[in-house]
Amino acid sequence: MLEVNNLVKSFGGLQVTKKVSFEVKKGEIFGIIGPNGAGKTTMFNQISGFIKPDSGSITFKGNSIEKRSPKDICKLGIGRTFQIAQPFPKMSVLENVMVGSLLRTKSINQAREKAKEVLDFVQLNVPYDTPSSNLTISDRKRLEVAKALATEPELILLDEVMAGLNQTGVKEFINLIFELKKRGTSVLIIEHIMEAMMTLSDRILVLNYGEEVLTGKPQEVANNPKVIEAYLGDEIHA
Ligand SMILES: Nc1ncnc2c1ncn2[C@@H]1O[C@H](COP(=O)(O)OP(=O)(O)OP(=O)(O)O)[C@@H](O)[C@H]1O
Image (tube, rainbow, N blue to C red; front, side, top):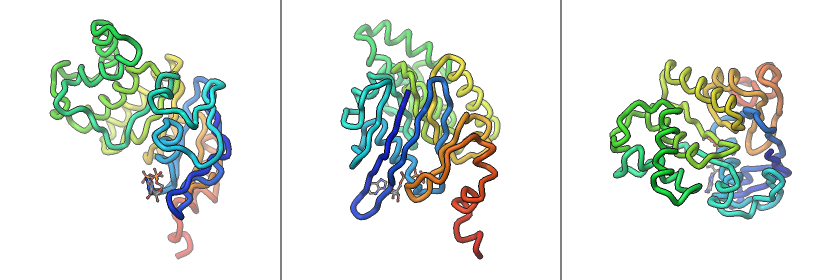
């Protein structure tokens, strides 16, 4: 479904994506992990068109997308969330989600119905007219996912949607993501909560300093000494 090939990106002298390649299959939950600054969000930004790679290619359902705009990429079927959720603060939760659903329809009524359906699916259990600025962290995360889902993605990129949640919140999110998979949506996920990544992911790519350390099943990744070293860094030598 998604193929990333030899992707390279530098900011000034800092190379943050170093010839990274991977593919996400239809229906798969594919995780990306790595220490802070490893280049995970930069990878999402390239896939979703917010920054352009210096070289390499990204193909989605056979379409080359590395030079396309974020809107075109979203229309093709890739939705994303942002690490720092930024809802439109003066708008209600329903209106926020309608911004997403209006990508697929010009009818306000249809957009509203779609937005309600998505809000119910993510279990954002507040009245539809609640101003988004009044939401708790956990509900903001749900709204962030709802906005992305309203664009009807075939592949959704989730960037640390569980950060800051308590254990119950994390469990609820894991169930939600499994539910997405059941509905046929492919998922590319970045998360620091290792337990969640190990439970959810079919396969995991480990990045360190912009480079692939390993791609494998959760168990292979958890037991790999290179991965442990990437995480512990200097501590392991101390
Ligand atoms: N627009 C930018 N300009 C310059 N440097 C950037 C830019 N965006 C990211 N970087 C740098 O690129 C590196 C990778 O950042 P990125 O946000 O992709 O890491 P990450 O793996 O997502 O980290 P975290 O887990 O902390 O979110 C960091 O050193 C960061 O400072």
